[in-house]
Image: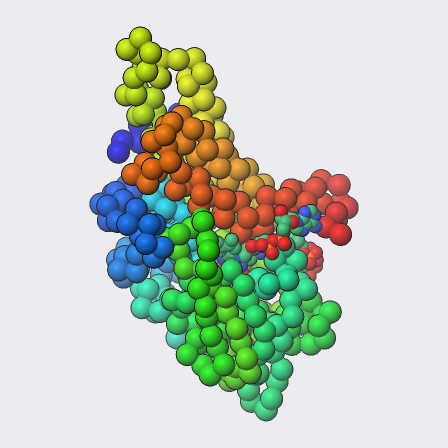
Length: 394
Ligand code: TGC
Ligand code: FAD
């Protein structure tokens, strides 16, 4: 599939040679390895696990982390572009990579000891080990600071008890980053992160049944019942709710790019269909004003999102970006992608509900992306607080 026409403002011209090379490499890999199998996995509700080693070999996991830990050491724009191209394939594929890199490798990198980094990062970078991130609980989604999961010190061990909900990669994972309170249940400051191997006694994971979105992705519930881990499992530099929220900022940044990829796939599909589908008077539907305006709106939304993501990436590389800027991009770009997917599906008529076309798969996936990593509403409230200085969460 050609991508001419989904770069209306010559974003390519703003990229370095290395960033373009990364984009072309991931794009080709997605076309050759992901597109032929994704519908099968979506319909079977399975994640394409056989792609994991190659994703590791190509350097997708934690691609913006340093080479000394086996990572690609790319800048944040190139890292964002990887997310864009993976999500052009499927949001489930980008989710897998986001969780592995931004939510498992990043906390080990940012809050771990040197021994923890040496032990875990190279294996997570190759995909030899798979990780998940347990923050959300059944009664604490948008408000993770209320979490009930506890870690209590017992000699040289910690004992963890609690339940985590909606955990991407949960049933596939070898290791879970678990966030738990080590002090009073109303003390957000006592939240610490733990590296928990999933084969420890008392740890169990169960697939989330009944999903209608992100079907080619593992989403699970975790239960920790008197799970004992050594003191060395504690991420020593983690402290307070701020630590998991810092991880979310990394993942939200990747999503701001990823959503553009899903939107690009839907737009391309809609353009091709509009030019070829003939109704009334032997003319393609793309000759009608209503479909042309529909396509114009999609391309405008994508172009604005591309510019936002690129500038955010440049700010991140300069070390001057803020979590609130990430919130704006996650919120805008995912919303834009939801609109694009829905409009593309509608343009395709009856064919739009079939799995051999991509738009409805992306449309369903993007409903999860709209909700996870901070819902659209929560990012609106984060922005509102920045603008007014008044928190409106309660
Ligand atoms: P609040 O008092 O505002 O903040 C506590 C401390 O954290 C700091 N902070 C951040 N730091 C870095 N990045 C961010 N994004 C940050 N947001 C806040 C803040 O400055 C403060 O620092 P300090 O030094 O004063 O202690 O905390 P709050 O309890 O009022 O919560 C605020 C709120 C609602 C914004 C936060 O709880 C939130 O973001 N809620 C949304 C939860 C969420 O996004 N969950 C995602 C779970 S993981 C997931 O969905 C994975 S999907 C994976 C996939 O498949 O891709
Ligand atoms: P709730 O917080 O109950 O929100 C319900 C509704 O109320 C939403 O519309 C929300 O915007 C709104 N709302 C909430 N608070 C307010 C308020 N103060 N003012 C106005 N409106 C409000 N979590 C992890 O920890 N790890 C993962 O790997 C992970 N993967 C996920 C994968 C999938 C497919 C999904 C769907 C979720 C995943 N999550 C994960 C959880 C995700 O982060 C939460 O679903 C999300 O944070 C929202 O929490 P909730 O579902 O409990 O909704």
